[in-house]
Length: 130
Length: 123
Image 1 (cartoon, one colour):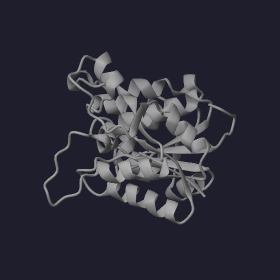
Image 2 (cartoon, chains in turn red, green; image 1 turned 90 degrees about the vertical axis):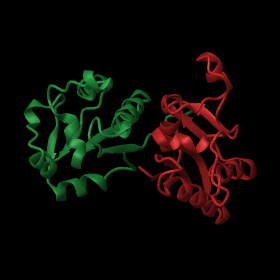
Image 3 (cartoon, chains in turn orange, green; image 1 turned 120 degrees about the vertical axis):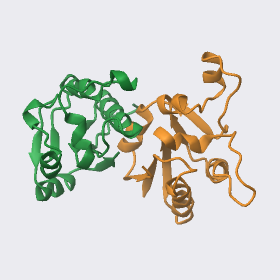
Image 4 (cartoon, chains in turn purple, green; image 1 turned 45 degrees about the vertical axis):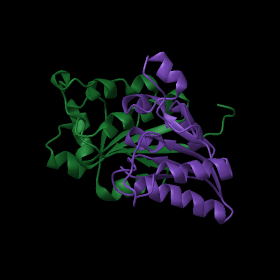
């Protein structure tokens, strides 16, 4: 089955974001495919490369990075949410004259059209958090 | 989009208009979905019915006016807007004065509505 995931909550609040990453890992292990993960609103914070976690807590970006690097899963941030939450890639940091990019390069900043496209091309769209 | 694959989508709006940034995000998703020529209908439930309150003034909050955005739904060809009748009664929402034409649904009718779509998006 082809799944797409919509992540709404920040990884530092509740467990929606972490559950989403674990779901994606499990689905792929069982032979399903993840068409895309779309991060909206506070969900975009999952991409942060600047978060500093306590030593006994897992940096949430690592699970997503692994999904992208090991399985090529597309990780898309809603651009208007990402900008609001300060999640900038090099292009946006330059465009808005911010000191540096703040997202992990496994993530791509794009528009809501990518969520619409995910709906059109997936058997199931599953929402996490929020 | 690459092809014309079309699925029916119901967006369920559950947030109060200015209490959560997800309320505005849900409206943005609805407009974007319609702009990409997908079949999208809306259902307001729980606190979400407050998004349909008339004469919203968000100026002092420094936020965009969600009521005004909802008034533009017909221009995006979003013509089927449904409202949780129980929540509307609880929040004393007069559906006739809402910024967009909407239909009240009893709980059983909401259930019947939801099973008819390819995708449900609850925000």
